[in-house]
Image (cartoon, rainbow, N blue to C red):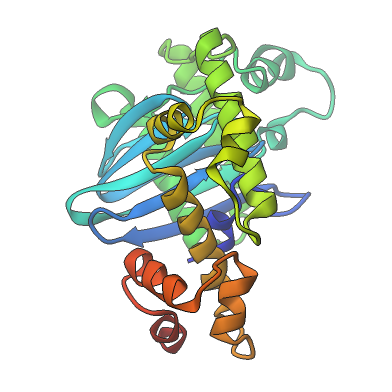
Length: 292
């Protein structure tokens, strides 16, 4: 699993490279796990669920996505996910810059399809199911296989499938205009992004609820209710989850002492760090390091 994909809240991971800005990632999680930390990025993203069910939250919208279904996330959308049911889940996430389909000259395709897509005036449906979008899902499944095996020239096929998805969505009337969101939802999302960015930049040190509430601004009680409604977690649980994931990455380096890691990611006491780590990762930091 690419842990860096899930680390950053305002994600800075480079997906693919400048010549082919496309990355694919596979995940498997136990029942009830917090599978995707809240984050956003400028690239678009397709989640294809292969097993189980995932409850995704995109900005303020909740979508239960089952095996064989997919969701599409426009660049800039804040999103998170939790495994549902008693069997856990597995899924593939494909992250890409839609500019990879741009024409070298401003032709009809660029004007009529690519620009409207980038401006979210004509984008893929949010939730794709076999009942409504069988052909789109077939292209998505093909892209997951191509990304896993990477045969010679697979990059051409990936771009081809994305172009064909555009065609099929347009010809079947499934392109969606998401350029205008409700003003209230936009305000809430921007407020949450501000808080998330603050956590990302200051997680090494103690963070008081009053600091986060003052960013919006709200009272601490209002802020806690707001944060829980937007992320599904309390602010403290959210910060602990983020710190633990940072710690998990540091544990990959055998020279890092566990006590030093605890302090580096913002835990004041090693015993509290171990307790929180076990709760989130289902093992102690030392056990996690042994697994690696």
